[in-house]
Image 1 (cartoon, rainbow, N blue to C red):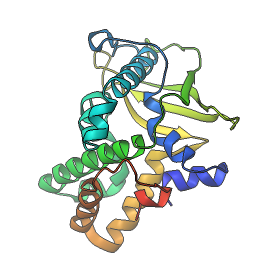
Image 2 (cartoon, rainbow, N blue to C red):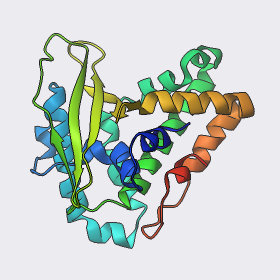
Image 3 (cartoon, one colour):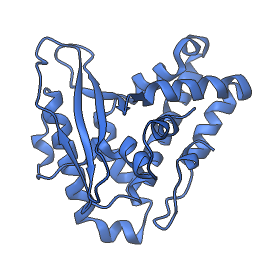
Length: 235
C-alpha cells in the first residue's frame, strides 16, 4: 500500500493529503537567497528551502503556465540538492539492493530520482501559494547528532485540521550537509511505504520491470489542468 493511501486511511480528506505528503518540504512565508541556505543546520535548511521554493513558484508562475514541464526544472534545481535520494533509493530496495549489479543499481537510482522529480512537479500543479503554509516546531539540538527529526504542521485555509509532519534528516559525517531522506505524515513513513511497493513490484516484474515502471511514471507529462487522485501516483 502506497504512502499517500496509508495517510488517507488515518485522516479523511481529498488530494490535500497527497499535497501534504509531497510539498510539505517547501512551504513557508519568508524570503531567502540561495547563497543563504544553511546546510549545516537541519532546521534552518528546511525553512530556507521552503522560502526559496515559494518565492520562485510565485515569481515564475507565468512561465509555469506557459510550459508546465518547467516545474520539473524547479524541482531538480531546488529540491534534489537537499534530498538524499541515493540513500532513499537504496533504502526502498532494502535487502534486494545487494542482489543488483552495479549497472542495475545505477539505473534504479536514476529512475527513482526522476520519478521523485515528476511526482513533485505533478503535485505542484495543485499548489496554491495563497492557501498553504507550514508551521515548524522549535529547533532542537543537532550539533552532535547524525540524524534528527524536524517536526511541523501543514495548515490550509478553510478549517481543515493541520497535518502532522516529521522530516527525517541526516548527514553522512559531521562535516557533510544535512539532507532529507524520509517524510512521515500522520505517522506514516514515505520510505516504508515505497519499500513495500518496490518489493511487490520486484516479485511481479523483476528488477528490469521495476526500473521501467519508475521510468514510465517519470515520463508522464505535466498538465496544470489534471485532476489528480492519490491512485495516479501508483497506477
